Length: 121
Image (cartoon, rainbow, N blue to C red; front, top):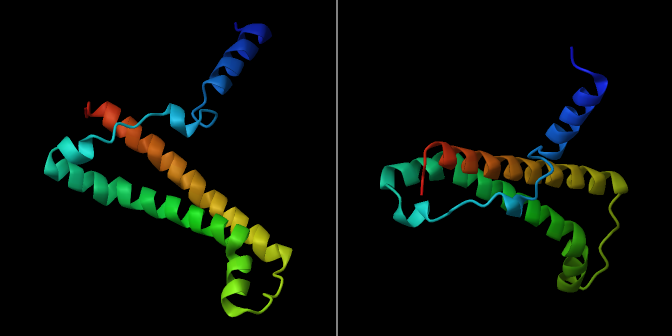
């Protein structure tokens, strides 16, 4: 029978080792395979992982830039004040940006796991 104390210490250890708590920079991906890898495998990586990873990152960055400096840049370009958007639209865009960022994070982890599993470089 497992005591409460040992169960609690195990769950704390599992929680601390969770991949969601690790900083993305700590999950180093060796990108040398794009240059030195087998062309068919590189094409597969690009088709199944990298294109979706780049789209997710680009969309998250674009939404964050739009929310932060978009109205200012638009008002400078048009020489008119830009109408204020409702907080609901901003909240929706923040949620969408977070979804794209989370998907990019998970794809990066999947790329690393797949490369480690197949002993790529």
